[in-house]
Length: 127
Image (cartoon, rainbow, N blue to C red; front, top):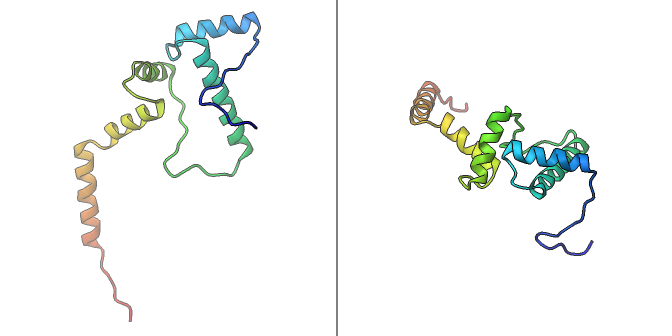
């Protein structure tokens, strides 16, 4: 395969009903600002789903998860990405998780638990 440019252009012919559905989706979702963005995301999602299905049994990285979000949450995060507040949806979700689970009081409680566990452990020397 020849070396690909960063963004190559392709031509895609679609039935008018599909184009109408795409346009409606772009308007209603606010996640995408045009057909091209929607098409790129759809192709990426399709390929990722097919690749994951083909690699059944393969494991994700220790910090990778798949989540299903309610449409309003997804639209809100997509809006924040579209506004440039976050670079990607993944970055937005990671930030949300950090804020939810790493509040100062949660971190302090975890540290306290760790100290208590360490002080409760006894090291038994080898005989």
